[in-house]
Image 1 (cartoon, rainbow, N blue to C red):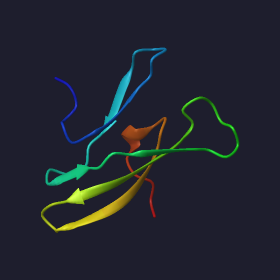
Image 2 (cartoon, one colour; image 1 turned 30 degrees about the vertical axis):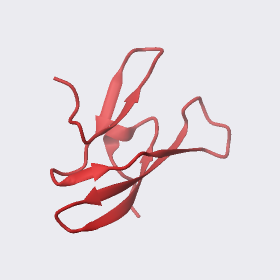
Image 3 (spheres, rainbow, N blue to C red; image 1 turned 45 degrees about the vertical axis):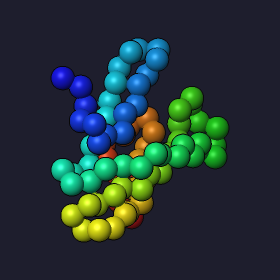
Image 4 (tube, rainbow, N blue to C red; image 1 turned 30 degrees about the horizontal axis):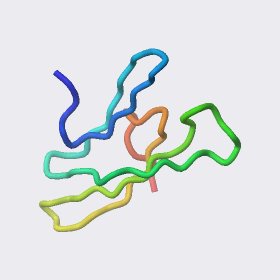
Length: 77
């Protein structure tokens, strides 16, 4: 079975590995934006910024994820 519908997914086309991060049950990510690291890191090195809709709280929060390790979840504020 694949990742939940409300997850952000990273697929490595070189290895075929797929990793994902899913917010809580009543939460859904909006379309993420990729921001590359300023030091010219490896391909894909950077951050994913995404708004997370929290339906049960009637609000959105911004999360920041390491684009190469999204399974680790959001970085602390």
